[in-house]
Amino acid sequence: MATISHPAFRILIEKFGGCDEYFTEMINAGTLMTGGPFEKYYIDPTPCPEKIVWQLTGHDTKNMEAAAAQLVKLPGIGLDINMGCSAPDIYKTGAGIGWMLKPLEETREMVEAVSAAVQNHNKESGEHKRFSVKLRLGDDNFTDEKFFAFCNMLVDCGAQVLTLHPRTKKEKLLRPARYSYCQKLAEVCKASGVQVYLNGNVKDLPSYNHAVASAPSVDGVMISRAAVQKPWIFASLKDMPAVDIDMQQLAFEYIENIEKYQPVEFWKTRLQRFFTYYAMNFKFSHYAQTQFLNAKDNADLRSRITEFFEKCPEERLKNTGNCDTILN
Image (cartoon, rainbow, N blue to C red; front, side, top):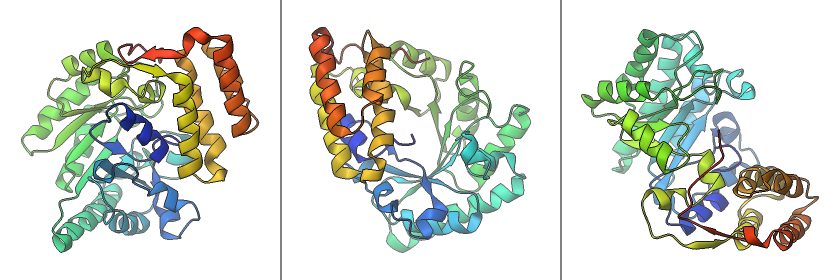
């Protein structure tokens, strides 16, 4: 998740017991290969290198292949190509879901090159790094035939996990996720041993149960936005003992870790993104968002947080047993 899936956020999730895998922010292949000044922050696996999946984006085969060869040498589970991002500034360059809109053979060439980079590393190192792809259903005019042909291509090229967000490019969050496609894909992939992860609209225990009941053959569930609002969601879904949370202390610790692990140039965007969701935990969420997002700097943000809890002391303690969210 852009501006979120970095060390500070992973530290926060681990505080509540963690999750099984952490997909990083999208790492731009071209920028990585040209030695961009901020790339070192994208490839920091803190605090749990063994759980990291390096998520790669880019629009050309040459850089995607070279970046994959570099990333797969880092600690972690493996490498993931993002073909699901539908943000205009991503897909209009040919990256993200842009790969699903290109001629199939052009995309196949890139996937084969990235897959080969992972396989070559495994042969040379004796490691078993995983190769995976995150995708959507395609454009609004997608057909079942075209979608499953695309997935078959990914499997033929060596993808071991497919994470499906079952919406089209334009749908974003406007319509319910079509979990039936996750189930169909899992059934199709079972014979080849390829795993399928479901992504989309899982925000609490009821929605998790609904998703899994709708697609019982999937091998995993990816959660993004709900985990930002409630970093303890994984603990809740795993039925871990509920504990009380000091929301003021949580906020201060997060700011401290942003300052520790992110460059100054990133502080504002990453804090604003996090506190947009964090504020949804409170009864007066709009007021909280306005207060937090309009902070002039980190010192001002800390002051505004302190003032908020002085005015709303009943909001300071939350319990991990409460996994309700207000995300659409």
